Amino acid sequence: KLDFRPWVDQDLQDDTEITERDEDEWVDNDEEDDLPHVPYSPPRYCEETMLQRSKDFYTLMNQRRSVRFISPEPVPKEVIDNIILTAGTAPSGAHTEPWTFVVVSDPETKHQVRLIVEKEEEVNYRQRMGDKWVHDLAKFRTNWIKEYLDVAPYLILIFKQTYGILPNGKKETHYYNEISVSISCGILLASLQNAGLVTVTTTPLNCGPQLRILLKRPANEKLLMLLPVGYAAAAATVPDLKRKHLEDIMVHV
Ligand code: IYR
Image (cartoon, rainbow, N blue to C red; front, top):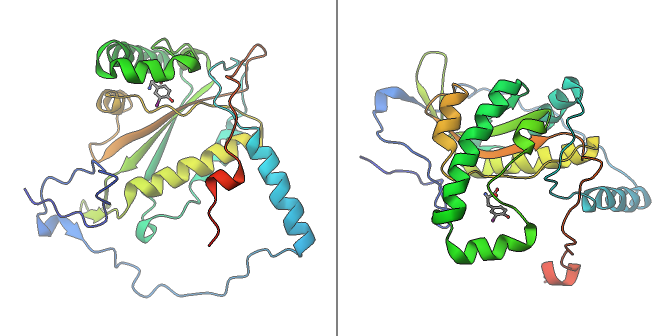
């Protein structure tokens, strides 16, 4: 077993799984050796407009909260399509776009997801997480009962592709797949906020393989995040958290 994963930061301990490197099975990402480079002129604003836009975007994003009370009210599927397209604009290692966004609206499948998550989360809270972790979460009033998994009109399950499988069956290295997909998740969260939808970022511990099999995803895909998506319920509440001030998060050298 060769463990050659130079793109995996030691600190991150990415569990990217590559069991063997049979050289015949792998191709270089060189199919586009002759990719033309074309002129690029991104939008550019005068300073006044920049200031206003940066403020407005901060104001919008500063209203984002993790919401655990989601309305069953339907949300147009086209909005979700646009949000996924936006998430797919994230940068990725060697432009491998190593993400799969599984959107679940089928009530029976949502319920199956709920059963899997609640069963494991009960074990997490009761055993795996330990007293300190459970105590640290007490103020958020979370537990293993996840009603939003049935109620939210959509569940978005984000998988990272630990390697790619080309149409000819060969494998393609997905450099930095975890950070690439994590960035796309951040953009997805911003896109949901922009559309007036809410979610809560969840990373269901020990549910990945079962959910992957439920959703018929291949073994190279690993669950990174599960997002219930919809409008906030009319009676939604959130913990009264404060954010750090600029001087506490920024160091200017
Ligand atoms: N995954 C569990 C526990 C949990 C962990 C953290 I760190 C949170 O910020 C919130 C919850 C759950 O979803 O309940």
